[in-house]
Image 1 (cartoon, rainbow, N blue to C red):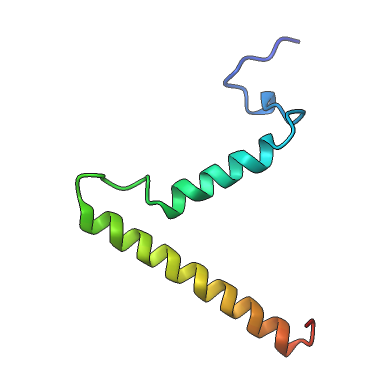
Image 2: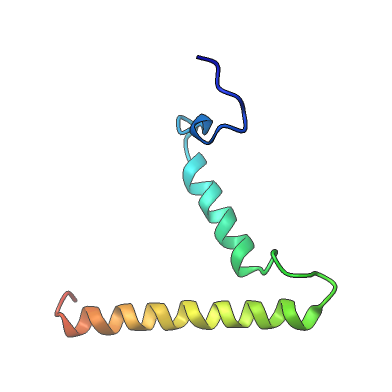
Length: 72
């Protein structure tokens, strides 16, 4: 049973830190707005600011709900 490299099941989970480092790299690319047009600086910065504000709002809501539910 030879798996080809493009097979999604062929990911190497035996690599220590492979899963975590790949997800951190994807998150860094996401918050760094790597999926936008690099020639349009306004779009890049607006995307970065919007995603950063959404992360701050998510953390704030998580803290608020945790506080209301007396988890901390």
